[in-house]
Length: 227
Image (cartoon, rainbow, N blue to C red):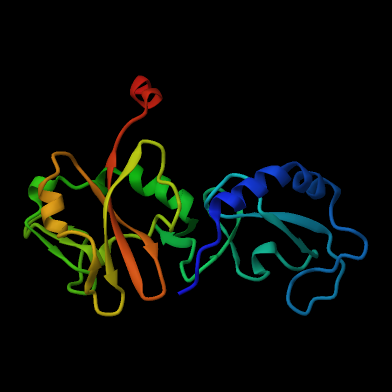
């Protein structure tokens, strides 16, 4: 299992260097800068900033020629909502997800997923919880009352903050091969103790394990006033 880099340190460094990177974008690549696409020897004509899911500041630059888009270089992709060039991963966990037939970064996916009322479940209707890999089907079957953890969407990454107004409540870790629970309390007992809707998501993916997190809504004062 790979270790995650120090996210706070990465964010602090990016914030400190944001102005320098913005100047480099405006200036463009140097005369000797070659395109970073594999085996391309053409002169780069554009410097494109790349980001991760942990802050709004660019983490670096990709230099490309006219023939190669920045998301064809290395392990990067373009999010179809924010239109930013995003690093695909730092560890085994990927930062892109396909949601509603679009390729999104986990930051935009989380904003969209948690804002959809259909993804919030009334705990009073949950009668059983199926561990990852146990069953196939929808996230929640209203007729049987089964919450299917295999169907939890990956919309948060390790150390990624949830959207404003959404708070972490509890998580359960499972072996990704066998579905065996390796940490956390009984999911059904935790859910039965809730008195408000919850949203279950896959909030960390490791090489051999996954974390299923339960999230609740806690509107900020600004959100309350807007409502």
